Length: 430
Image (cartoon, rainbow, N blue to C red; front, top):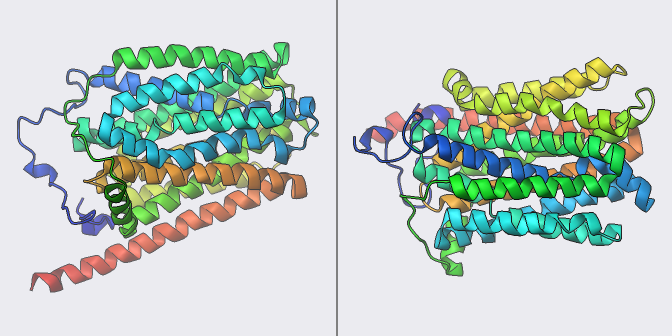
């Protein structure tokens, strides 16, 4: 698919990407079925599991945290927003470290610090201390997402990139699901503190396995840590219209997801549902749908194109939001299934497009995406909880629908830009 047909820019800064057809026949990058690909995929899958399990370990427990500390949903939601906000603030500096010291080194150090903090979280004596620990944990995890995408862009052949990133995102979904499922049932018996401690122990195992399995990078070239170089790279990325659109799309999708899953526990504990904590945790089994939709994003793009896939993801998410308004538990669950499928598909498509578009400073390009993505999560968590406090579940759904409208509007703008570029190419040729 040509840049004109997708709306993709052919440059980032002054460097043009190398066409896939120009790659040498002896390309040593990983490919499905080749040596090392399965180890790499499983290692990054485990990293994704640990990242989302730790990052959202308190989300399903917010009603219990509210009860222990005597605070409203909007205040308890800061245990989620602080973690995602810390990640958003530190993902760019961490990406710069990965350009200098290597993707695998930074990812390993980030996981080590995050799991260490995770083992301290259960002992937080107050909500304020809990929020601070969660912010530190999020900042530590910042070394994972951007470095992982940069690692994949360097070590995996271009045709397999969407699938490889989809598997990493699938790990995110499994981590989010298992973390909430485990915390829900453990908290029902032993409280929220024991449940987040269990997640910390699981993350330790994932971190060790990740480091043992991930193949050593073969195509990494160390970059500069000079602030001027970093700022120039960031400026070049932000000057690219396609990258700006992808960053905004990632943020808006995550605004929906963060708001819905921060508030859903409160809704399901109230009438007419009145579900116990363990059952609420089990609701997050719908994340398995996200695992499938993320891992199949490559085939979806192959059939519909990038923008077609984004339209489908946005429409699916919107349908799920509307269904979730029903006072029927089966319809609410079906709504969550659609929201989850749409979100993970949209995220996999947008994030892989960032990695394909940027040919220089890939870690910074991915870091900017991740920063906007997790800013969207923080905004969704706080605004969604505030809307729920003011207007119930309908208020949270309204926030989500506005975000989906933003995704569609930006994608339409990309389609128009592609048509303009296609009309100008014949003129330029003459």
